[in-house]
Image (tube, rainbow, N blue to C red; front, top):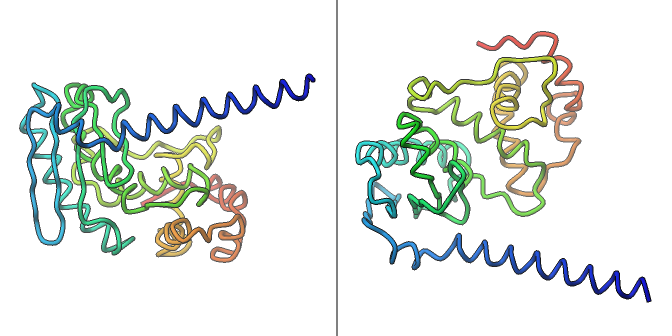
Length: 241
């Protein structure tokens, strides 16, 4: 009887979590609702790429808006050319007061928190990071999240238009860090690999993730050491150019 109750409870919890996930996905993808709430909608096409800019904030800074659009059309084509020529050519930006993070991307959509840009108007390379997630388009179960975010920040570092203007830089190495810390810490490790171990390794890593071919043997196969050994080598001399 206890096992049966536990099983039913588990089913209920999983069903509840799935329904909440489905609701979240629905809110994310319901562009029709965003359009109804929009104070402005712009469609901009340059070359083979189209950006729909949906602004749901009544006081979003127009100079910041123009900078975000400019950054998209400079860097998204670059990222596509380097990493994934098959990435979507149609992207939607939503300035979303209901979104409480900084920014997030998925399914051809990037949502931005307007409050972030009120406090950080120079942080335009949030675009460079987020649209890289669209280029990545990794399938579920492709690999660890620290790789996903590490690559996106690596791309921000290597292609960023004005990282200095946002006071954004790679995190200085510290012995307490781990390659699994993700974001700028992992990005620095990746940059070290790219510049001291093997040029093109991050492009190969990105492709392996997208093709769902990544395994822990990736590092040994391409660099002759496992990732822990590479981190140890990096920690001994973490200088980057």
